[in-house]
Amino acid sequence: MSEDVRDTPQLVFRLHDGAPELVREVLLERGWEEFNSQEHQEGDWNLYWRPSAFRSSDYKRLLPWQRLNHHPKTVGITRKDCLARNLRRMRGTFGSTLYDFSPTVFILPNDYTRFLAEYTKHHLCGAASGGGEGGRATGYWICKPVDLSRGRGIYIFEDVKDLVYNSSVIVQRYVSDPLLISGYKFDLRLYVCVKSFQPLTVYMHQEGLVRFATEKYSLSSLDNLFSHLTNTSINKFGPSYTTDKERVGQGCKWTMSKFRCFLHSQGVDQQLLWLRINSIVTLTLLTVAPSIPPSRNCVELLGFDILIDAALKPWLLEVNFSPALSSDCQADITVKKGLVHDMIDLMSYQSGDSLRQRGYFRQKHKRPCYLGSQLQPAPGLPLSKSVCRHQSKKRSHSQSSLQALLTEQRRKFPPSSQLNQTCSSLRWVSSTAGSNPTLPPHSHPITAVTGNRRTRPTPSSLVTGNRATARVSEVTDVSGDTDALTPDSLRRRVTPQHHHTVGFSSSSSSSQACKLPAIPPRRQLSVRSPWANQRQEWSMAPHPPCRVGDFILTFPFNRATLRASRDGLDVRTAVQEVSKLAAQLTSQY
Ligand code: ADP
Picture 1 (cartoon, helix red, strand yellow):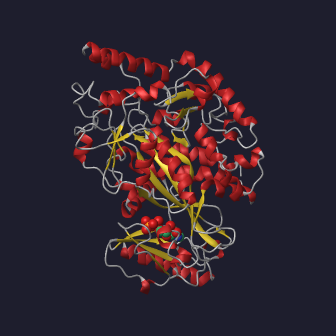
Picture 2 (cartoon, protein in one colour):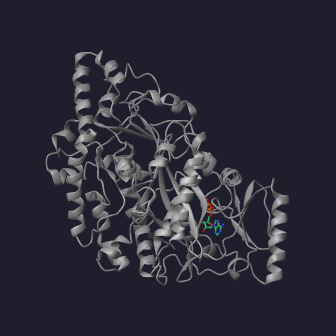
């Protein structure tokens, strides 16, 4: 362990009742200390993690070195009826061609008459043609209580006579032709971290989960939940859960990398699929982003549930608030631990946060971050001149601490003149990674942040050899289609489990298939690309790191969206850019 790590006061986390045990495990592993009301003062914590929403007073009291694991007011997409309403509004504004990724939905009881009209239309249409979209019957619906999760209270029906509800529900067109693997239905659980809503900064985790139904799909048994629902909470009680199911295996989950490799083995070109999924995430977040108060000290982990149909079209089923971080199986362990580590890295704690938390800056930092955050230096960002001036009035003890902090921050945020130097060292990392047959160069990130995990050294420290083990996030810049890989992500990618389960060769093309494609895709960066000329500018402009651990930046994704996300979100431009990207890629297929 380096001196740096030993000497830095610990960061302190506070877990609310019901917070995932995994969060405690990860933070303790990283050398954090758990908040204890006997030993710590009320505000002596750096991270407060709650499974449920915070009160508005929690945001108001938030101090610069503290983070919360929720942004305020995200219910607009995480409650089924609110999501339906917001997507309907966006469809009205931007057209149904772009916002066509959510199955037709009605909020009952209010929309009952409209539902009946749609139901009748489909029914008549189906009866006349003997089938509907894709030659399949279209008359299936799924009814879900608006405020329940984990499959509770859900049922599928064909005949309106079977629609029964005694609370607020949504009735959604049932995607009756899902893509199947050996006859089993599945959906994708994607982990999306919104680092900030203003400016909108979104990361998607490279890993995720594929959740299978445990009985073969059949429209002749609509009441068999083990065949139609993919919730683990339901399927783990199914009779076939432990059976070794054809291709799917035991249990009901795959990792996302295994799924990507499966698609690759089937000859599926995934570029378009992942681009569409990215667009769904961005377009969904754009529905609420302008209404969320700025609070830079918050991050939000969201679970996006996506169903892919037989034509490879992804559909958004729902967005989960506080997605489950419990571990039922090996896939959970593989995915979720790395996810939480990467999420902590994304919070960009600095060594100064623990110093401040210990009270050095406490007196002057009475001002909370909520709503006033634009005027505060965001934690994890270099201190502004005014703060430096403000801090310089402190007593000499504080001055030396501040000096240390500033030196530390300068080290992590090098002036642009130093970036080229950093780039070349990282290119070296990338080319080294690329020479390993199991670790092909990744095509996406321009900037990468490597973690502050106590037990996991950073690649830059390994390569350059002149940096102490980092306890705080390090920002590095890479220009070109190369990628700085962290030893953690490398380790995760080369775990024997991945290779055994997937069973593919170690050729770089098949390994590449297990990763998220670049956004914008490599092809988009060709000479014909509208961003080709801006690429240098984008890479050198101040922008969020393109990669943090296995989190990949998905918004902003080019210069126009970077600009649109600043100084008040320009939703129209952002939507137009997503639309442009989708149109360009679609035209290539
Ligand atoms: P919950 O919050 O209870 O998990 P979801 O909306 O995620 O509710 O639905 C649970 C499961 O039902 C999904 O994982 C999926 O397998 C299935 N499902 C939900 N909506 C649809 C739909 N419109 N078409 C097909 N399957 C669906």
